Image (cartoon, rainbow, N blue to C red; front, side):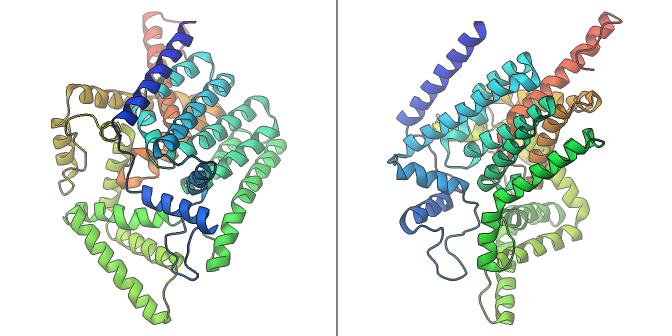
Length: 449
């Protein structure tokens, strides 16, 4: 009963916060908003992403269709007000919480699921992203649902759960292409735990086949336009325009923004040279390949610096609080410091300047994130020792989505599986508590075996 009252209170809190967001005319426009809105409008007016009849296609057509289709459908049914659309995203987020609480109990147990549900309702990321025109919230129920479905398969050994997981992951990859390679890793975990089971082998093969079939229409469409199987160009963009700028700052001492301008100039020259060589404009895929080759060439020139920068980026992804973004979205008074305010400074100078500009509340939230990351790292050992397929799956999810941004260190990639990061920390805390109990009461079993 107390838990229900707590959940009811948190739902009221979120409702009041959303009303405050609307009344304050909160900021919901970010850099990625424009392309999504343009693609959605093109779908509504012309039935296709791009209005160009030949390459290069304008606007960019390689943002996977999930989120633009969502925006187009919302507009098609008569919802045009931006705040009404963001209310739909708030409801999708709460639906994700409900899905996790309802189906997580059968996989993770009552206590852990209840604690994680409370965390989802108060997490700053969960308060911020529904108030942005970004694909994160729409992506969340598919990746969470897919992992939960695999968890139920591990518990019940019913192949239909894997079929459900493949469908959810397939739709999720259409929303966020970052998910594309995760099912391969998930299948690897299943086979690792059931390597001698022919039945699981066939089930896993069916899972991967159905997932591939979900991607086939999009890949076939891109092959039709460009003669290549191609999912998305966002990885090439991230590598070339962001990670290499970070790398140059570390390895060559070139300020970040200046590095981005130099990179853009070099890439433009490469595109022009290749166009002249082929005597035609390059299509989008060819431009992405040039970006990727340029990025790989620079990484191979400075491998040590790249590994160091990647380590800093992963650390930032783990402990990012999203407080700065939330304050901006809600238009709270006062100037809030951003980690990148001192963009051209070194990593430790950025950290020092960022911490000095924070209020007591913000510092407490940063401390909470550091503790959460610390306990999550401690949770790795009991999870590995548990030989529990489901726990290994959430560990894999955390490693995968925290590692994807690399040296850029963007916590938005962590957001869809934020609840799993909390659960890993929860397991680490229980493990430490179990060791303490054993020390105080010798012979008592630890919490997690």
